[in-house]
Length: 597
Image (tube, rainbow, N blue to C red; front, side, top):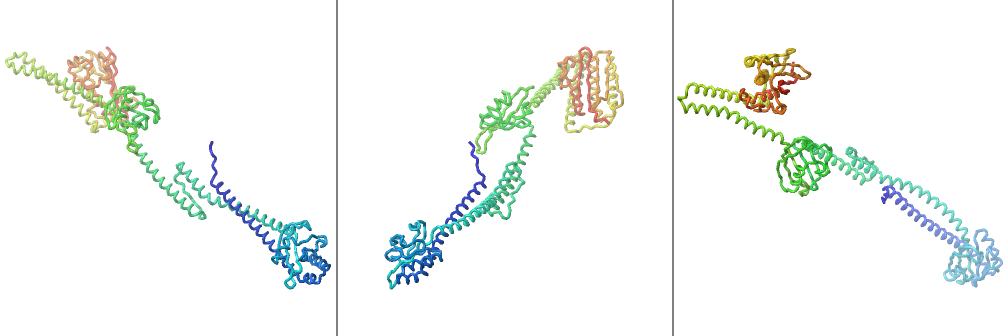
């Protein structure tokens, strides 16, 4: 059950009101008691004064024993002064009373005020009077004659008269009390509000601060207390300091996030319970994660990859950095180089692991290509070198070899030296194109594409005529293009040589130039035997041949199409091939049209 808490105002206001009410009530009660006591004392003093004034006359009458005159004077003087006057002899017998006949009255010697007057010289009592059957205040004094008591004079007044006067006072005091209570209620309300207002202002600003608004400040009135002002100033200082610290933290976090997000390496932080703490965008991309938010989820539930899961488990068990390669299988096979290190909390205790991994699939592919390239180069160079070495040793060992064989051997040596020179030149050309492309040293000029095409056709024409192969150029318009004419010429020559080698005699090679949308397409179509589809994807790799025996027989180095590919890349273009068995192949060099003038 939720306890409903009171606000500070409803704690202060009732407290102030209760304290004020109790204090005023106590003051009123003391005042009423004081009024009553003072009024009784005044009435008693008044009765004493009246008794003293009347005493000489009644002393004379008692001394003369004129009891009847005493009764008459009592009635006259009592009525005039609105006071009950009673004259009592030392024996207690009443000889005068203006309210009742003395003969009907009891002996008053035992009355309290009479006894006090007899023994103490004065007597005062407030009691119920049996003669009149009412509450009255009585004052008695002895009447002396030569130090001898000859009688007692008593004055009295009914308490009803006193009570009426007191009730009038009580009414006025009570009215004032309720007026003061109302004033006090308003004063308490104002004081409570005045005390609570600074706290309310600070509370509102604290709520804004909790909601992230650090610009608001506490504004207090000059009438607020010094403590409230100091508290407000302290709160404002806290807000300023907090704002500055949060800005620093946010800037640091943004910097870290920027670094974290821009990293090409994938980063995954996992706690000791195998829950994902953080991962960057590179990790999403490398691991092909489709779910957007996997933080807080167990790793094996978020990423279904047993190889990576085993790596995380292994890393969680290690207390020192580790490094290993793993192979994962998504849509394609990927090779990752993963480096893990323990994740420590603020107390330097291990709370998980941090794994940073690079996708080295391309590096592995490049490494494989490099190995294949080295192997191919070694093989391609070894063949002519072996032939040259073997035949030259034979010539040296047999100097008297018949002229016909000697000439044959020399011809073979010459052929292989030409092939070796061709391989080296192609390798140097390929290396030069790659290097100049990387450092952006290839020079481009606005020249007509027809110049490169015509030069290439001219240089390949004789080779084509030897096999009765015609070369036909189809170009709808003269296209001026920002390019390197010598490189484009080299690419066309390589494509034409390739088409001539693998075309049947008495056929035709068509060169078509088309400006299409944002590209310029240069297509070279032959009427050869075609290329099987399984070879098309690797056709532009270095030293790759569809028919190695036929290629060597025709003098191919296996680098011509690779050179074409790199020339296309140097122009931000592409090279593609379409082929059909027994019908021929079409090689298309595509160059971006935005470089045209």
